[in-house]
Length: 391
Ligand SMILES: Cc1ncc(COP(=O)(O)O)c(C=O)c1O
Image (cartoon, rainbow, N blue to C red; front, side, top):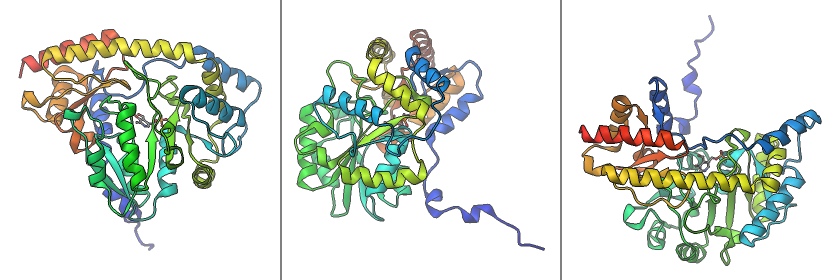
């Protein structure tokens, strides 16, 4: 008789240390409930604009089905480079400073792995996007949370950053506009962070996937600040701005030494991003501005509706100036984030995400995505009001 296999014995220790995504749990719960309204998903409700889909269909008809360069199509890298020099007056060499990836998700993983030695500390301001902490752990690094607070509109303060830095600190992960809070940081705010980063000689991974989704004031690209270009790995992609989540397409921009190390990992784990998506992305950058701006105007209308609605209900909600999330406080209901979200789901069939899923700093808050129609938002607000009134 051969020995019985216990598969769980083979799972790496780090996997057991990483808690499962709290977001998934809510989607699983919600999937069991009929006609639930979802303010849960961080995904545009728009279908990818037709001209982008058409470009992809056309490319398939022409038989463009091969691998591309590991770095991504040169034509796409040139368009990305042009777009960033136009938007932020910053220049990246398409030959050596841009890597096309399968989503910011891959870019993030590869960026962290390319700079992290075992035990290196990576600072993560929280509340934070759910992938940051696990990605650092998978790379053998140590995630160091910094608590951002509502009192500072969820901006990272230079003194809080400074206090978290040790001689093991390797990098800071910045994410503005922010998921889950919708917070943004002004140029002045970011300059203060840049001072600390330079003083302590650390890298920055700046996830700016929501850069096109800002309201009331533009976006400052972190690597465009004086002295920051060479210590920043800038991540961006097509999922949010162009409603292209299913294309899985994004890119990293950084100095050649960093892109070369990221490339070493990417070429073995991904080889290259899908060619169809890359061709769609070229079309998005060349001709997608008008449609994208239309979607942003729609998000802005929804933003006003949800923020004023939540405040009227008595759930204090600071004004999110970017991305497509509102982050109201539920503290004055006496319920925890989890109790509120779970009861709201079962009693009124509205899916939201409890803020603590994004780290301890999110305790007492709720993430409500407004990437859904005005009618759905109105109905969700009515249900939330009925729930709060019934408490
Ligand atoms: C802050 C942030 N970064 C990265 C991602 C992942 O983006 P992608 O679809 O490009 O992998 C998301 C998706 O929600 C996000 O909110």
